[in-house]
Image (tube, rainbow, N blue to C red; front, side):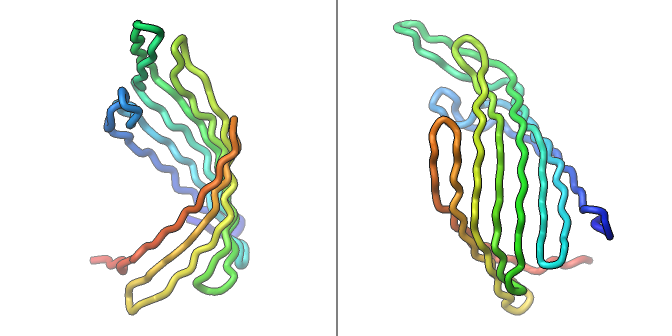
Length: 167
C-alpha cells in the first residue's frame, strides 16, 4: 500500500504455458515463469511506475537447418527487463503517458545462446468516460524500438470496464 514517502509495491509471479508450435516460430512449446517487481508512486498529478523482472523459459526449442542437416536444440532461457513510466493527469479522465522498456532477450543459436538488447520508448495518451457504474477507456501510443534495427508502430486500445463489487 502506498503511503507518504512510501511507493506501492505489488510483486507478481506469472506462469507461461507451453503453447504454440516452435517448429513454425509460434511460441516456444515450453513452460516458463515471469517475475515482476513493480513500484508505483503518485506525486500530485504525476504517477510514476517502475518495474524490474525476469522471464524464464524452462526448455525453449528451436530448429536450425545446415544444408541437409536438421539441428534441434532445447535449452532454458532467462531474459531480464527494466521498465519505467511517467503518467501526467492533464484532466480528471485524460492522461499523457511516456513509457520505456529495456529488454535483454536471450535466444537459441545453433551452437549456444545469444542475447538481444532492445530499448522501447512509447509516448501516448488515454482517456476515459464514466457511463453509469461502467467506464470506457480508449488510448493510443507510438512505440519506437531500437535494437539492431529501429522500428515503430501504433498501439490503440479500447476497454469497457464493469464495476468492481465486493460481497
